[in-house]
Length: 468
Image 1 (cartoon, rainbow, N blue to C red):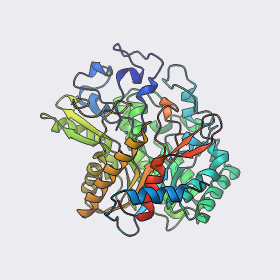
Image 2: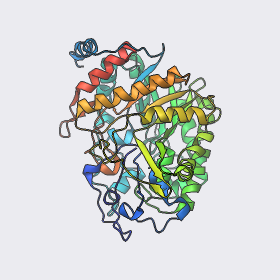
Image 3: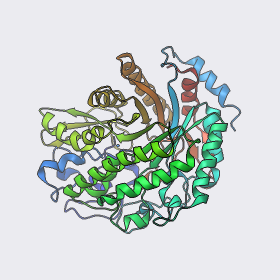
Image 4: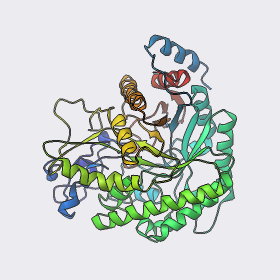
């Protein structure tokens, strides 16, 4: 989870937006807001109810030398502990962050709205709408066995009830190319973006949106049936509801505690209906939810406040996964909570350029909690974990420690079936633009040329050996 300070939110001490975001405090999912013991130090929350003001605490993708380089890195390391047979290794992306030209959704509109705080438009993305074969080839050549990407709802259903055969065929070709390359397609049906026509009708504030989403899932899954190997219904609905409807820094830019609670319920309903729709349209495809999770740690008597925050941010979504085929756990750092709310970073802890702690142990903690909360009845997948940094050695160190935590969880009997790094590419990081670099592969912003980083070859070596 990432700390986003008051200035980053574009909110001054009076609660007014300053119409900008600070790019050097970039963040990737799940975009945390740690409000601190004194909320006024980070964000003016006077408009929020006291009992929930601190819920804002957790708001957190052909190289001929790659095999040889990976082998060299593998031999030079001390990897010795295997992962279970069949453990899955992949990377993740999202349509709006890499495709380019997704003008028909609420995020594009938000990027072009004065005062939204977005530092730049997504524009051409990584040109992956055209260059997706390069991304497929990278995944295969690096040796990952699955690739998680999202389909863009606003391309497939550009107006209500109007379906684009060309768009859905585009995604089917990508799925088929992945399969041909030996990489399993993992498809996310909603990753933060909503069609403009639906947003204009109230978007996720309206209960009817759950039915609209289920229809979209049924249509799309039916046409991708046979070509997808795993389906994620909604990516981090807790972030969309909190950041967009209580913090006001995602579209639609609202700040309403009660509305956020209602949006949570709509998202849970949408997920459950989508599970049924996908299972009906694409029998045999495992379906689950991906959830932003933080390692919430109570400090100096903060247990009650911690539990309150987790209830809205995580627990009610985990409760809604009963009967799913898997839960996707997505974690980046921890959140420290005192009796009055978030208390920020611990003095002396290493802090990343985005302002949050370097804390890879969060992944193990959130896996354990997801397992506990679901009574060990639903298998877990790490569907996002990574670090935004320009220091690739730091990236390797972070992922190594995170994977050590995965192994400890598995050793204790927790059913963790795979690890997906966020992200394959340095891509568009929402309000923070192209500044944050989470990718294993760099992307030239002028030519869109892809260049794997040393961390890509390092992680590829681990995936090929299935051992750390």
